[in-house]
Amino acid sequence: MAMRFSSMNAIVTGAASGIGRASAAIFAEEGARLLLVDRDREMLLRVADDLRKMGSAVETIVGDLSLESTAVEIAERVRQMGSQIDVLVNCAGIDMNASLAETSAERWDEVMAVNVRSAFLVCKHVVGFLSARGGAIVNIASAAGISPIANHPAYNASKGALIAFTKSLALDLAPAIRANCVCPGAVDTPLLHSSMNQAADPAAARKAVEARYPLRRIAAVEEIARVAVFLASHEASYITGAVVPVDGGRTMH
Ligand SMILES: NC(=O)c1ccc[n+]([C@@H]2O[C@H](COP(=O)([O-])OP(=O)(O)OC[C@H]3O[C@@H](n4cnc5c(N)ncnc54)[C@H](O)[C@@H]3O)[C@@H](O)[C@H]2O)c1
Image (cartoon, rainbow, N blue to C red; front, side, top):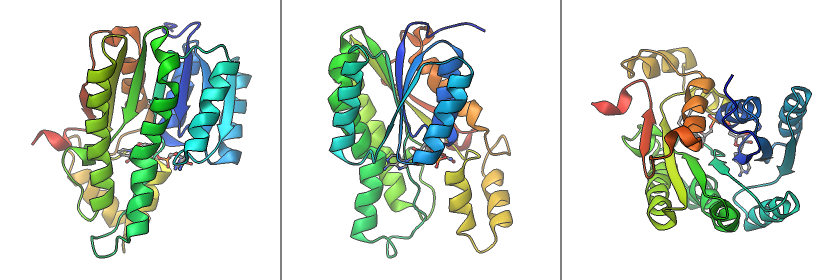
């Protein structure tokens, strides 16, 4: 196994579950020292323990990423870790399956706060540490930010905004820092399950989702995480501002 991240430090948000957890595992396997952030204390500590058992150096912060105080805490911890960060993956996010009429102003704000504001806040507070040695930001947006999912106006808007924010970062932080986003299609995670469980017939909902994808299936978390890690690595040294669909072909047509 290549060790693309030996003596590098990586932050992964939303690391307690799904795509964030899978990304953290690959970074750990490839030598990175990790700072993992999530609001789910129990799961986050379990993920960190598992990675430590495999020999990785892992720190954790339990916090709500929609709050600036969590981003400030991350920056403080980075200082304690030696003020050097090579990789930031903003993965924390929530889904919202609700029509325009069902979307309250409060729920709209919540989706925006978790899916966009959190990435803005973490970038703002750690960018100084990233630029010190050149570095890479990877934001986990969604295919929904390119081509909308029905009945998801707030979610689609939040992911479209995250894509535009990523391009802004790429433009403004070049040449020192690269910033890219991954746009997953449907991925087998608790986020997708909770969305499908809101349907009257979850099994039929799953079949309907699969039918929308030319590859005719839902992705495994590793299929997304591998691309996020690639974009964070030196192998992607000439890629910045890219919006990379990893969506089984859904948004190509
Ligand atoms: N699963 C999919 O089908 C899919 C598709 C496209 C994009 N995505 C995106 O991928 C990212 C990861 O999703 P996932 O499917 O792995 O979901 P997941 O629910 O498995 O994991 C998301 C993690 O983010 C954490 N989180 C949520 N809100 C938070 C907050 N305010 N503060 C701190 N932590 C918070 C959760 O506790 C959880 O551990 C999300 O941004 C999601 O929008 C997922």
